[in-house]
Length: 89
Image 1 (cartoon, rainbow, N blue to C red):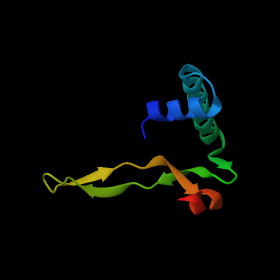
Image 2 (image 1 turned 30 degrees about the vertical axis):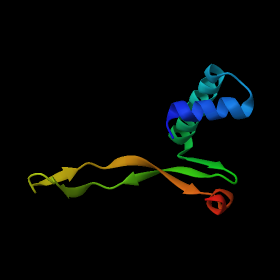
Image 3 (image 1 turned 120 degrees about the vertical axis):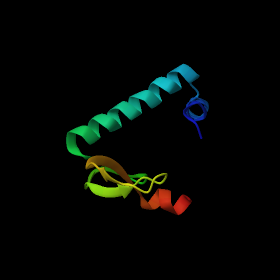
């Protein structure tokens, strides 16, 4: 599903315009991002939990040349599905 398809689905379910649906989705994304930057964790009961995890630096391999490369440490977002969501999939 693309962002445009998600916006159309939100707008249809909520009975609002696509422009309002796009603003709602953009607001959701911005607030999730803000919460993860601030506390590193965001839980939505029944849906799941987003958390920030620090990935360690590691040695990788260039698939074209086979040469070893160093991959820097970085923060990544992890999502764990909640019981309700996992049960519906």
